[in-house]
Image (cartoon, rainbow, N blue to C red):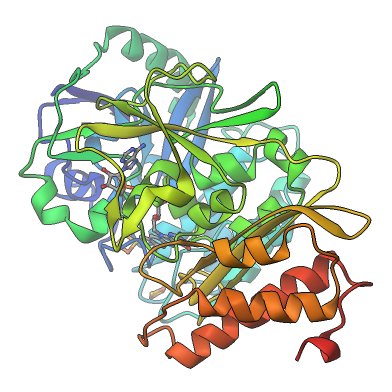
Amino acid sequence: MKISFICNNQEINTEIHPATTLLDFLRKNLFLTGTKEGCREGDCGACTVMVGELSGNEIKYKTVNSCLLPIGSVIGKHVVSIEGLNVEGLSPVQLAMVEEGSTQCGFCTPGFVISLSAYFLSNKDYIPDEAIESLDGNICRCTGHIALKRAAIRSVEFFNKHKGESLVSSGLLPSYFSEIPARLKKLKSKIKSNGDGEKTNQYRIGGGTDLFVQKWEDLYKSDVSFLNNNGLDEKIYVSGNECFVSASVTVTDIMNSEILLKYFPDIKNYFSLFGSLPIRNRATLGGNIVNASPIADMTSFFLALNSKLLLISGNTISSSLGSKPKGREVLLKDFFLGYKTLDKKPEEIIQQVSFGLPSGNSLFSYEKVSRRTYLDIASVNTSMSVESNNDIIQDIHISAGGVAPIPLYLAKARAFLMNNKIDSKLIAEAARIAVSETSPITDARGSVQYKKLLLRQLLFAHFLKLFPTKVNYEELV
Ligand SMILES: Cc1cc2nc3c(=O)[nH]c(=O)nc-3n(C[C@H](O)[C@H](O)[C@H](O)COP(=O)(O)OP(=O)(O)OC[C@H]3O[C@@H](n4cnc5c(N)ncnc54)[C@H](O)[C@@H]3O)c2cc1C
Ligand code: FES
Ligand code: FES
Protein backbone atom coordinates (compact mmCIF):
# COMPACT_ATOMS: atom_id res chain seq x y z
CA MET A 1 0.00 0.00 0.00
CA LYS A 2 1.42 3.38 -0.99
CA ILE A 3 1.12 5.87 1.85
CA SER A 4 1.46 9.57 1.07
CA PHE A 5 0.95 12.40 3.54
CA ILE A 6 2.60 15.58 4.72
CA CYS A 7 4.53 15.40 7.98
CA ASN A 8 5.30 18.87 9.29
CA ASN A 9 6.78 20.60 6.21
CA GLN A 10 7.79 17.44 4.34
CA GLU A 11 5.88 15.24 1.88
CA ILE A 12 6.23 11.57 2.84
CA ASN A 13 5.79 8.69 0.41
CA THR A 14 6.31 5.26 1.90
CA GLU A 15 5.32 1.64 1.42
CA ILE A 16 5.82 0.67 5.05
CA HIS A 17 3.23 -1.72 6.55
CA PRO A 18 0.05 0.38 6.99
CA ALA A 19 -0.48 -0.85 10.56
CA THR A 20 2.87 0.56 11.69
CA THR A 21 2.00 3.07 14.39
CA LEU A 22 2.62 6.69 13.55
CA LEU A 23 4.62 6.90 16.79
CA ASP A 24 7.11 4.28 15.57
CA PHE A 25 7.29 5.79 12.09
CA LEU A 26 8.01 9.27 13.47
CA ARG A 27 10.65 8.09 15.89
CA LYS A 28 12.31 5.21 14.01
CA ASN A 29 11.96 6.18 10.35
CA LEU A 30 11.89 9.97 10.40
CA PHE A 31 14.02 10.28 13.59
CA LEU A 32 11.56 12.83 14.97
CA THR A 33 12.10 11.84 18.58
CA GLY A 34 10.31 14.81 20.15
CA THR A 35 7.16 12.66 20.17
CA LYS A 36 7.58 10.43 23.21
CA GLU A 37 6.62 6.84 23.92
CA GLY A 38 5.06 6.40 27.35
CA CYS A 39 2.29 3.90 28.03
CA ARG A 40 1.56 2.84 24.42
CA GLU A 41 -2.06 2.42 25.49
CA GLY A 42 -3.58 5.85 24.93
CA ASP A 43 -3.42 6.71 28.62
CA CYS A 44 -0.59 9.23 29.05
CA GLY A 45 -0.58 11.66 26.10
CA ALA A 46 3.23 11.66 25.70
CA CYS A 47 2.82 10.60 22.06
CA THR A 48 0.18 13.21 21.12
CA VAL A 49 0.40 14.69 17.62
CA MET A 50 -2.03 16.68 15.49
CA VAL A 51 -3.64 15.31 12.37
CA GLY A 52 -5.17 17.80 9.94
CA GLU A 53 -7.72 16.90 7.31
CA LEU A 54 -9.00 19.00 4.42
CA SER A 55 -12.57 20.20 4.81
CA GLY A 56 -13.38 22.45 1.85
CA ASN A 57 -10.51 24.94 1.65
CA GLU A 58 -9.66 24.68 5.32
CA ILE A 59 -7.81 22.11 7.35
CA LYS A 60 -9.35 20.81 10.55
CA TYR A 61 -6.77 19.70 13.07
CA LYS A 62 -7.39 17.19 15.85
CA THR A 63 -5.13 15.71 18.49
CA VAL A 64 -4.57 11.96 18.42
CA ASN A 65 -2.46 9.43 20.31
CA SER A 66 0.18 8.40 17.76
CA CYS A 67 0.81 5.16 19.69
CA LEU A 68 -2.66 3.93 18.62
CA LEU A 69 -2.68 5.48 15.15
CA PRO A 70 -1.86 3.27 12.16
CA ILE A 71 0.07 5.14 9.51
CA GLY A 72 -2.38 3.87 6.87
CA SER A 73 -5.01 6.18 8.31
CA VAL A 74 -3.07 9.41 7.66
CA ILE A 75 -3.04 9.11 3.86
CA GLY A 76 -3.72 12.53 2.33
CA LYS A 77 -3.51 14.26 5.73
CA HIS A 78 -1.18 16.66 7.53
CA VAL A 79 0.63 15.22 10.55
CA VAL A 80 2.15 17.75 12.95
CA SER A 81 4.66 16.51 15.49
CA ILE A 82 6.30 18.80 18.02
CA GLU A 83 9.15 19.49 15.57
CA GLY A 84 6.58 20.88 13.14
CA LEU A 85 5.75 23.69 15.58
CA ASN A 86 9.30 25.05 15.68
CA VAL A 87 9.30 28.83 15.22
CA GLU A 88 12.00 31.46 15.80
CA GLY A 89 12.50 31.38 19.58
CA LEU A 90 9.63 30.05 21.70
CA SER A 91 5.98 30.08 20.64
CA PRO A 92 3.52 31.83 23.03
CA VAL A 93 2.43 28.39 24.32
CA GLN A 94 6.00 27.26 24.95
CA LEU A 95 6.83 30.59 26.60
CA ALA A 96 3.79 30.32 28.89
CA MET A 97 4.93 26.80 29.91
CA VAL A 98 8.43 28.07 30.72
CA GLU A 99 7.25 31.18 32.58
CA GLU A 100 4.70 29.26 34.66
CA GLY A 101 7.22 26.54 35.58
CA SER A 102 5.14 23.90 33.80
CA THR A 103 7.97 21.63 32.80
CA GLN A 104 10.60 19.70 34.75
CA CYS A 105 11.93 16.49 33.20
CA GLY A 106 10.23 17.51 29.96
CA PHE A 107 9.02 14.04 28.99
CA CYS A 108 5.35 15.07 28.85
CA THR A 109 6.04 18.59 27.54
CA PRO A 110 5.78 17.92 23.77
CA GLY A 111 2.36 16.32 24.29
CA PHE A 112 1.14 19.28 26.33
CA VAL A 113 2.46 21.82 23.79
CA ILE A 114 0.77 19.93 20.93
CA SER A 115 -2.58 19.69 22.76
CA LEU A 116 -2.63 23.34 23.79
CA SER A 117 -1.48 24.56 20.36
CA ALA A 118 -4.19 22.40 18.74
CA TYR A 119 -6.77 24.10 20.97
CA PHE A 120 -5.87 27.51 19.51
CA LEU A 121 -5.72 26.08 16.02
CA SER A 122 -9.15 24.45 16.14
CA ASN A 123 -11.22 27.04 18.06
CA LYS A 124 -12.27 30.60 17.32
CA ASP A 125 -13.17 31.71 20.86
CA TYR A 126 -10.62 31.04 23.55
CA ILE A 127 -11.97 30.22 27.02
CA PRO A 128 -9.67 29.29 29.95
CA ASP A 129 -11.71 26.27 31.12
CA GLU A 130 -11.91 24.89 27.60
CA ALA A 131 -8.18 25.34 27.06
CA ILE A 132 -7.58 23.40 30.28
CA GLU A 133 -10.01 20.69 29.15
CA SER A 134 -8.11 20.35 25.87
CA LEU A 135 -5.24 18.94 27.96
CA ASP A 136 -7.29 15.99 29.16
CA GLY A 137 -5.40 12.80 28.39
CA ASN A 138 -2.00 14.46 28.92
CA ILE A 139 -0.42 13.33 32.14
CA CYS A 140 2.58 14.95 33.84
CA ARG A 141 4.26 12.92 36.53
CA CYS A 142 6.61 15.52 37.95
CA THR A 143 5.54 19.15 37.49
CA GLY A 144 2.04 19.05 38.90
CA HIS A 145 -0.98 20.02 36.89
CA ILE A 146 -1.56 23.40 38.58
CA ALA A 147 1.41 24.97 36.78
CA LEU A 148 0.16 23.47 33.52
CA LYS A 149 -3.29 24.94 34.08
CA ARG A 150 -1.66 28.35 34.68
CA ALA A 151 0.20 27.99 31.37
CA ALA A 152 -3.10 27.23 29.60
CA ILE A 153 -4.75 30.31 31.13
CA ARG A 154 -1.74 32.50 30.30
CA SER A 155 -1.83 31.28 26.70
CA VAL A 156 -5.55 32.10 26.45
CA GLU A 157 -4.82 35.63 27.71
CA PHE A 158 -2.10 36.00 25.07
CA PHE A 159 -4.24 34.85 22.15
CA ASN A 160 -7.26 36.86 23.28
CA LYS A 161 -5.01 39.96 23.19
CA HIS A 162 -3.85 39.02 19.68
CA LYS A 163 -7.31 38.22 18.30
CA GLY A 164 -7.59 39.07 14.64
CA GLU A 165 -3.96 38.19 13.97
CA SER A 166 -3.24 34.94 12.18
CA LEU A 167 -1.64 32.20 14.25
CA VAL A 168 1.41 32.47 12.02
CA SER A 169 1.88 36.18 12.74
CA SER A 170 1.16 35.74 16.46
CA GLY A 171 4.01 33.24 16.54
CA LEU A 172 2.17 29.97 17.26
CA LEU A 173 2.72 28.38 13.86
CA PRO A 174 5.63 28.41 11.43
CA SER A 175 4.86 30.06 8.10
CA TYR A 176 4.72 26.80 6.09
CA PHE A 177 1.28 26.13 7.64
CA SER A 178 -0.36 28.62 5.28
CA GLU A 179 0.71 26.55 2.25
CA ILE A 180 -0.57 23.23 3.62
CA PRO A 181 -4.18 23.43 2.29
CA ALA A 182 -3.00 23.86 -1.31
CA ARG A 183 -0.30 21.20 -0.89
CA LEU A 184 -2.79 18.70 0.58
CA LYS A 185 -5.26 19.31 -2.25
CA LYS A 186 -2.52 18.57 -4.77
CA LEU A 187 -1.42 15.49 -2.88
CA LYS A 188 -4.96 14.14 -2.56
CA SER A 189 -5.53 14.42 -6.30
CA LYS A 190 -2.51 12.13 -6.84
CA ILE A 191 -3.64 9.49 -4.36
CA LYS A 192 -5.40 6.48 -5.79
CA SER A 193 -7.93 4.48 -3.80
CA ASN A 194 -6.52 1.45 -2.06
CA GLY A 195 -9.86 -0.35 -1.81
CA ASP A 196 -9.70 -4.04 -1.03
CA GLY A 197 -13.09 -4.80 -2.54
CA GLU A 198 -14.98 -7.64 -0.92
CA LYS A 199 -11.93 -9.49 0.41
CA THR A 200 -12.12 -10.13 4.15
CA ASN A 201 -8.92 -8.89 5.74
CA GLN A 202 -7.59 -10.40 8.93
CA TYR A 203 -8.02 -7.08 10.74
CA ARG A 204 -10.35 -4.27 9.80
CA ILE A 205 -9.40 -1.07 11.58
CA GLY A 206 -11.83 1.64 12.63
CA GLY A 207 -10.22 4.22 14.91
CA GLY A 208 -7.81 1.58 16.23
CA THR A 209 -8.25 2.59 19.89
CA ASP A 210 -9.18 -0.94 20.93
CA LEU A 211 -7.21 -2.91 18.36
CA PHE A 212 -3.90 -1.11 18.93
CA VAL A 213 -4.12 -1.61 22.69
CA GLN A 214 -5.00 -5.29 22.35
CA LYS A 215 -3.04 -6.49 19.31
CA TRP A 216 -0.48 -3.98 18.08
CA GLU A 217 2.27 -6.57 17.72
CA ASP A 218 0.05 -8.77 15.51
CA LEU A 219 -1.31 -5.92 13.46
CA TYR A 220 1.85 -4.79 11.75
CA LYS A 221 2.51 -8.34 10.55
CA SER A 222 -1.06 -8.93 9.29
CA ASP A 223 -3.32 -8.19 6.40
CA VAL A 224 -5.26 -5.05 7.38
CA SER A 225 -7.82 -2.70 5.87
CA PHE A 226 -9.25 0.64 6.95
CA LEU A 227 -12.98 0.88 7.46
CA ASN A 228 -13.28 4.66 7.43
CA ASN A 229 -11.52 5.61 4.20
CA ASN A 230 -14.58 7.09 2.56
CA GLY A 231 -14.15 10.77 3.51
CA LEU A 232 -17.86 11.05 4.39
CA ASP A 233 -18.92 14.63 5.04
CA GLU A 234 -22.38 13.91 6.32
CA LYS A 235 -22.11 11.16 8.89
CA ILE A 236 -25.33 11.83 10.79
CA TYR A 237 -28.61 12.73 9.17
CA VAL A 238 -32.37 12.56 9.54
CA SER A 239 -34.73 11.09 6.98
CA GLY A 240 -38.44 10.89 7.78
CA ASN A 241 -38.76 9.88 11.42
CA GLU A 242 -35.41 8.15 11.57
CA CYS A 243 -31.90 9.27 12.39
CA PHE A 244 -29.03 7.55 10.55
CA VAL A 245 -25.55 7.50 12.02
CA SER A 246 -22.57 6.14 10.10
CA ALA A 247 -20.64 3.49 12.02
CA SER A 248 -17.54 5.58 11.28
CA VAL A 249 -18.63 8.51 13.49
CA THR A 250 -16.24 9.27 16.31
CA VAL A 251 -17.24 10.28 19.82
CA THR A 252 -16.19 13.84 18.91
CA ASP A 253 -18.51 13.76 15.84
CA ILE A 254 -21.37 12.64 18.08
CA MET A 255 -20.69 15.37 20.67
CA ASN A 256 -20.57 18.05 17.96
CA SER A 257 -23.58 16.89 15.95
CA GLU A 258 -26.23 19.60 15.81
CA ILE A 259 -28.84 16.96 15.02
CA LEU A 260 -28.04 14.88 18.08
CA LEU A 261 -27.71 17.99 20.28
CA LYS A 262 -31.21 19.01 19.30
CA TYR A 263 -32.70 15.73 20.55
CA PHE A 264 -30.23 15.08 23.38
CA PRO A 265 -29.18 18.48 24.77
CA ASP A 266 -26.90 16.89 27.42
CA ILE A 267 -25.02 14.69 24.96
CA LYS A 268 -21.75 16.62 25.40
CA ASN A 269 -21.82 15.96 29.14
CA TYR A 270 -22.51 12.25 28.65
CA PHE A 271 -19.59 11.71 26.34
CA SER A 272 -17.11 14.06 28.01
CA LEU A 273 -16.67 11.08 30.37
CA PHE A 274 -15.49 8.92 27.43
CA GLY A 275 -11.69 8.45 27.43
CA SER A 276 -9.77 11.64 26.66
CA LEU A 277 -10.01 14.16 23.82
CA PRO A 278 -7.45 12.35 21.58
CA ILE A 279 -9.29 9.04 22.17
CA ARG A 280 -12.68 10.66 21.46
CA ASN A 281 -11.21 12.04 18.21
CA ARG A 282 -10.55 8.48 16.99
CA ALA A 283 -12.93 6.07 18.78
CA THR A 284 -15.73 5.09 16.41
CA LEU A 285 -19.28 3.88 17.01
CA GLY A 286 -18.73 0.71 14.92
CA GLY A 287 -15.62 -0.15 16.96
CA ASN A 288 -17.42 0.46 20.24
CA ILE A 289 -20.21 -1.92 19.26
CA VAL A 290 -18.06 -4.67 17.69
CA ASN A 291 -15.46 -4.63 20.45
CA ALA A 292 -18.48 -5.68 22.55
CA SER A 293 -17.14 -4.62 25.91
CA PRO A 294 -19.96 -4.90 28.47
CA ILE A 295 -19.24 -1.32 29.59
CA ALA A 296 -19.05 0.28 26.12
CA ASP A 297 -20.42 3.81 26.50
CA MET A 298 -21.67 4.55 22.97
CA THR A 299 -23.32 1.12 22.87
CA SER A 300 -25.14 1.96 26.12
CA PHE A 301 -26.52 5.17 24.59
CA PHE A 302 -27.69 3.55 21.33
CA LEU A 303 -29.16 0.47 23.09
CA ALA A 304 -31.50 2.77 25.01
CA LEU A 305 -32.69 4.21 21.68
CA ASN A 306 -33.58 0.67 20.55
CA SER A 307 -31.26 1.20 17.57
CA LYS A 308 -30.97 -0.94 14.48
CA LEU A 309 -27.72 -1.95 12.79
CA LEU A 310 -27.22 -2.27 9.07
CA LEU A 311 -24.62 -4.94 8.29
CA ILE A 312 -23.00 -5.09 4.86
CA SER A 313 -20.24 -7.24 3.35
CA GLY A 314 -16.98 -5.44 2.65
CA ASN A 315 -13.98 -3.68 4.07
CA THR A 316 -14.98 -0.02 3.87
CA ILE A 317 -17.97 1.77 5.30
CA SER A 318 -19.75 2.98 2.20
CA SER A 319 -20.50 6.62 1.66
CA SER A 320 -24.19 6.04 1.03
CA LEU A 321 -25.97 6.25 4.34
CA GLY A 322 -29.63 5.63 3.94
CA SER A 323 -32.94 4.06 4.62
CA LYS A 324 -32.98 1.60 1.71
CA PRO A 325 -30.51 -0.98 2.92
CA LYS A 326 -28.77 -3.54 0.74
CA GLY A 327 -27.52 -5.41 3.78
CA ARG A 328 -28.95 -7.19 6.80
CA GLU A 329 -30.72 -5.38 9.62
CA VAL A 330 -30.33 -6.46 13.25
CA LEU A 331 -31.59 -4.77 16.39
CA LEU A 332 -28.65 -3.71 18.55
CA LYS A 333 -30.25 -5.45 21.55
CA ASP A 334 -30.17 -8.77 19.62
CA PHE A 335 -26.61 -8.31 18.32
CA PHE A 336 -24.79 -9.50 21.45
CA LEU A 337 -25.13 -13.28 21.79
CA GLY A 338 -22.64 -13.90 24.61
CA TYR A 339 -19.32 -12.56 25.89
CA LYS A 340 -17.69 -11.05 22.75
CA THR A 341 -19.95 -13.24 20.56
CA LEU A 342 -21.94 -11.36 17.96
CA ASP A 343 -24.67 -11.97 15.42
CA LYS A 344 -22.21 -11.04 12.67
CA LYS A 345 -20.60 -13.05 9.88
CA PRO A 346 -16.82 -12.60 9.41
CA GLU A 347 -17.28 -10.73 6.12
CA GLU A 348 -19.87 -8.34 7.56
CA ILE A 349 -19.21 -4.84 8.85
CA ILE A 350 -21.57 -2.34 10.45
CA GLN A 351 -22.42 0.33 7.91
CA GLN A 352 -24.80 2.43 9.97
CA VAL A 353 -26.88 2.63 13.11
CA SER A 354 -30.38 4.07 13.00
CA PHE A 355 -33.08 4.89 15.52
CA GLY A 356 -36.56 6.41 15.57
CA LEU A 357 -36.50 10.12 16.42
CA PRO A 358 -37.67 10.85 19.97
CA SER A 359 -41.15 12.38 20.18
CA GLY A 360 -41.96 15.59 22.06
CA ASN A 361 -42.90 13.49 25.13
CA SER A 362 -39.60 11.61 25.22
CA LEU A 363 -36.88 12.07 27.79
CA PHE A 364 -33.38 10.64 27.94
CA SER A 365 -30.93 10.04 30.75
CA TYR A 366 -27.39 8.62 30.89
CA GLU A 367 -25.39 7.71 34.00
CA LYS A 368 -21.83 6.42 34.33
CA VAL A 369 -19.90 5.67 37.49
CA SER A 370 -16.24 4.77 37.29
CA ARG A 371 -13.50 4.50 39.87
CA ARG A 372 -12.00 7.77 38.63
CA THR A 373 -14.31 10.42 37.16
CA TYR A 374 -12.26 11.19 34.04
CA LEU A 375 -10.33 8.94 31.65
CA ASP A 376 -11.73 5.76 33.07
CA ILE A 377 -14.06 3.08 31.83
CA ALA A 378 -17.30 2.55 33.71
CA SER A 379 -17.86 0.28 36.69
CA VAL A 380 -21.52 0.50 35.72
CA ASN A 381 -23.21 2.65 33.08
CA THR A 382 -26.86 2.88 32.07
CA SER A 383 -29.00 4.83 29.62
CA MET A 384 -32.76 5.21 29.48
CA SER A 385 -35.17 6.69 26.96
CA VAL A 386 -38.76 7.04 28.08
CA GLU A 387 -41.87 8.37 26.42
CA SER A 388 -44.80 9.20 28.73
CA ASN A 389 -48.20 10.78 28.57
CA ASN A 390 -49.81 12.07 31.79
CA ASP A 391 -47.13 10.12 33.67
CA ILE A 392 -48.14 6.84 31.99
CA ILE A 393 -45.20 5.15 30.31
CA GLN A 394 -45.91 4.76 26.59
CA ASP A 395 -42.50 3.41 25.64
CA ILE A 396 -39.23 2.78 27.48
CA HIS A 397 -35.81 1.26 26.77
CA ILE A 398 -33.09 0.86 29.38
CA SER A 399 -29.50 -0.38 28.97
CA ALA A 400 -27.14 -1.53 31.70
CA GLY A 401 -23.37 -1.94 31.28
CA GLY A 402 -20.87 -3.70 33.53
CA VAL A 403 -23.46 -6.06 35.02
CA ALA A 404 -23.43 -8.94 32.51
CA PRO A 405 -21.07 -10.50 29.92
CA ILE A 406 -22.68 -8.29 27.26
CA PRO A 407 -24.03 -4.73 27.09
CA LEU A 408 -27.43 -5.53 28.58
CA TYR A 409 -30.87 -4.46 27.39
CA LEU A 410 -33.27 -4.64 30.37
CA ALA A 411 -36.19 -6.42 28.70
CA LYS A 412 -38.01 -7.54 31.86
CA ALA A 413 -37.87 -4.11 33.47
CA ARG A 414 -39.29 -2.63 30.26
CA ALA A 415 -42.16 -5.18 30.17
CA PHE A 416 -42.98 -4.38 33.79
CA LEU A 417 -42.95 -0.60 33.30
CA MET A 418 -44.90 -0.37 30.03
CA ASN A 419 -48.31 1.35 30.31
CA ASN A 420 -47.94 1.95 34.04
CA LYS A 421 -48.14 5.21 35.98
CA ILE A 422 -44.84 6.52 37.28
CA ASP A 423 -44.57 6.66 41.06
CA SER A 424 -41.99 5.61 43.66
CA LYS A 425 -43.52 2.18 44.27
CA LEU A 426 -43.45 1.30 40.56
CA ILE A 427 -39.86 2.44 40.15
CA ALA A 428 -38.63 0.60 43.26
CA GLU A 429 -40.12 -2.63 41.93
CA ALA A 430 -38.80 -1.99 38.38
CA ALA A 431 -35.29 -1.52 39.78
CA ARG A 432 -35.62 -4.81 41.70
CA ILE A 433 -36.64 -6.60 38.49
CA ALA A 434 -33.84 -4.91 36.53
CA VAL A 435 -31.23 -6.03 39.06
CA SER A 436 -32.59 -9.60 38.87
CA GLU A 437 -31.84 -9.56 35.10
CA THR A 438 -28.13 -8.96 35.70
CA SER A 439 -25.24 -11.35 36.34
CA PRO A 440 -22.23 -9.20 37.28
CA ILE A 441 -18.88 -10.62 38.35
CA THR A 442 -16.47 -9.36 41.00
CA ASP A 443 -13.46 -7.72 39.34
CA ALA A 444 -11.17 -4.68 39.62
CA ARG A 445 -14.17 -2.40 39.13
CA GLY A 446 -16.16 -3.73 42.07
CA SER A 447 -17.86 -6.66 43.72
CA VAL A 448 -21.08 -8.33 42.59
CA GLN A 449 -23.01 -6.65 45.44
CA TYR A 450 -21.51 -3.24 44.68
CA LYS A 451 -22.40 -3.40 40.98
CA LYS A 452 -25.97 -4.52 41.69
CA LEU A 453 -26.41 -1.72 44.22
CA LEU A 454 -24.85 0.76 41.82
CA LEU A 455 -27.22 -0.22 39.02
CA ARG A 456 -30.21 0.13 41.35
CA GLN A 457 -29.07 3.60 42.42
CA LEU A 458 -28.42 4.70 38.84
CA LEU A 459 -31.89 3.54 37.77
CA PHE A 460 -33.32 5.58 40.65
CA ALA A 461 -31.18 8.50 39.43
CA HIS A 462 -32.75 8.29 35.93
CA PHE A 463 -36.26 8.63 37.34
CA LEU A 464 -35.42 11.16 40.08
CA LYS A 465 -33.81 13.36 37.42
CA LEU A 466 -36.55 13.02 34.79
CA PHE A 467 -39.63 12.85 37.06
CA PRO A 468 -38.68 14.79 40.22
CA THR A 469 -42.28 15.47 41.24
CA LYS A 470 -43.43 11.85 40.82
CA VAL A 471 -40.60 9.92 42.44
CA ASN A 472 -39.21 10.49 45.91
CA TYR A 473 -35.90 9.02 47.08
CA GLU A 474 -37.09 8.30 50.65
CA GLU A 475 -39.96 6.20 49.23
CA LEU A 476 -37.63 4.31 46.88
CA VAL A 477 -35.28 2.81 49.46
C1 LIG B 1 -7.29 5.28 26.84
C2 LIG B 1 -8.60 4.69 26.39
C3 LIG B 1 -9.77 5.10 26.99
C4 LIG B 1 -10.99 4.54 26.61
N1 LIG B 1 -12.12 4.98 27.22
C5 LIG B 1 -13.32 4.44 26.86
C6 LIG B 1 -14.51 4.87 27.50
O1 LIG B 1 -14.51 5.75 28.38
N2 LIG B 1 -15.68 4.28 27.11
C7 LIG B 1 -15.73 3.31 26.15
O2 LIG B 1 -16.81 2.83 25.83
N3 LIG B 1 -14.60 2.90 25.52
C8 LIG B 1 -13.41 3.43 25.86
N4 LIG B 1 -12.27 3.00 25.23
C9 LIG B 1 -12.35 1.91 24.24
C10 LIG B 1 -12.40 2.35 22.76
O3 LIG B 1 -11.93 3.66 22.58
C11 LIG B 1 -13.82 2.26 22.19
O4 LIG B 1 -14.35 0.98 22.34
C12 LIG B 1 -13.90 2.69 20.73
O5 LIG B 1 -15.21 3.08 20.42
C13 LIG B 1 -13.44 1.63 19.75
O6 LIG B 1 -13.60 2.12 18.45
P1 LIG B 1 -12.41 2.10 17.39
O7 LIG B 1 -12.93 2.68 16.14
O8 LIG B 1 -11.18 2.72 17.93
O9 LIG B 1 -12.23 0.52 17.27
P2 LIG B 1 -11.07 -0.34 16.60
O10 LIG B 1 -9.98 -0.55 17.58
O11 LIG B 1 -10.70 0.21 15.27
O12 LIG B 1 -11.87 -1.69 16.35
C14 LIG B 1 -12.35 -2.50 17.41
C15 LIG B 1 -13.02 -3.73 16.77
O13 LIG B 1 -14.19 -3.34 16.08
C16 LIG B 1 -14.11 -3.72 14.71
N5 LIG B 1 -14.81 -2.68 13.97
C17 LIG B 1 -14.61 -1.32 14.03
N6 LIG B 1 -15.54 -0.69 13.29
C18 LIG B 1 -16.33 -1.66 12.74
C19 LIG B 1 -17.45 -1.64 11.85
N7 LIG B 1 -17.98 -0.51 11.38
N8 LIG B 1 -18.00 -2.83 11.49
C20 LIG B 1 -17.49 -4.00 11.95
N9 LIG B 1 -16.43 -4.07 12.77
C21 LIG B 1 -15.86 -2.92 13.17
C22 LIG B 1 -12.65 -3.85 14.39
O14 LIG B 1 -12.44 -4.73 13.30
C23 LIG B 1 -12.14 -4.41 15.72
O15 LIG B 1 -12.39 -5.78 15.78
C24 LIG B 1 -11.03 3.55 25.59
C25 LIG B 1 -9.85 3.16 24.94
C26 LIG B 1 -8.64 3.70 25.34
C27 LIG B 1 -7.38 3.27 24.66
S1 FES C 1 2.36 6.56 24.67
FE1 FES C 1 0.91 7.03 26.25
S2 FES C 1 -0.77 7.77 25.11
FE2 FES C 1 0.59 7.09 23.59
S1 FES D 1 7.66 17.44 33.24
FE1 FES D 1 8.23 15.41 33.79
S2 FES D 1 6.49 14.23 33.24
FE2 FES D 1 5.84 16.24 32.99
